Length: 114
Image (cartoon, rainbow, N blue to C red; front, top):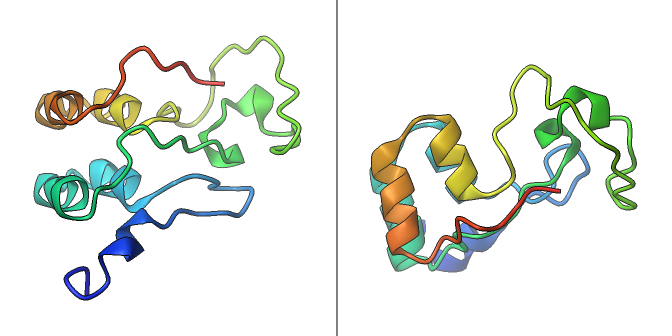
């Protein structure tokens, strides 16, 4: 499917709950290195795309409006906090190979979460 329609790999969630989550984020979560390579090398997936939906926020931030982003100081406690960027996802899942690969392909380790 990606051979015929490679731009499908560039799509991301636009709903409030998972806003910004992309195929690349999902491939990292599922530890699918070959998919990560396909998405980055063949489909030009954005290695610095932010996932900022409510799901990705610490519990004390989830009640805030996703569009206004009126954030307060957080305690970062919750069920799971992966960060917002693919590089943070790779770090949270302790995937050294994916982390290094993303760095080699332009991921910026200096980008900070909301």
